[in-house]
Structures are given as structure tokens and as C-alpha cells.
Amino acid sequence: MDFYRAVLEAIEAPEWHGYSPDALNDSIVFGGINGREPPYGLLIVGLRSSDVAREIQLVRETLAGGRVEFRAQRGMDAEVSIRVEGQQEVV
Image (cartoon, rainbow, N blue to C red):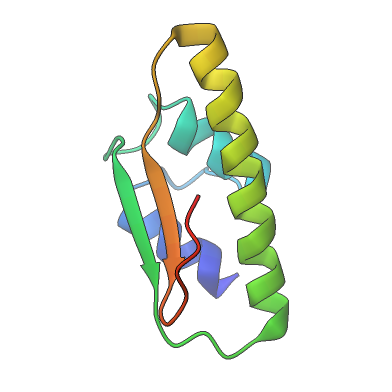
């Protein structure tokens, strides 16, 4: 939950925003919900939990799929990257 709280705070999400990969996809990729809109560059610092690492990977995969769908529907990209300190992988 700390991961989601931090992301939602960073993107200025409304209080009612959900805490799931799908909820992040809806608001980050498809937009119109948060106080901040893409491009997003999220850097995760101090990751020490394998459970959180798995959740971040699930969010990355969900956002990557959402971006494909967004490009197909709208002909443009929603620029989003998630990087974990010390790793090179991004969405």
C-alpha cells in the first residue's frame, strides 16, 4: 500500500483513486483523473521487499499493455516510465 500511496501522491490522484495496477493504468495512461498528466517518470528508491518488487513489475506490465491499447485507440503514446533505483528496466 505504501507503493500505491507514494505513486498516487506523486501524480496528484484524487482521494477516491483505486490501489491496483488497473486503476493506475486507467488514470496514468488514459488520463483525465489526476492533477498531473503524462509524461511520467517514476523512480522507486529504497526498495527492500520482494512483494513490492513483484507488484511494481505487475504495474509495469499493466501500463505497457495499456500504452499499446492507448496508441491503437488514439494514435499517440502516453509516456510513462518506472525505474527502480539500481535497475535499468522501464515501462
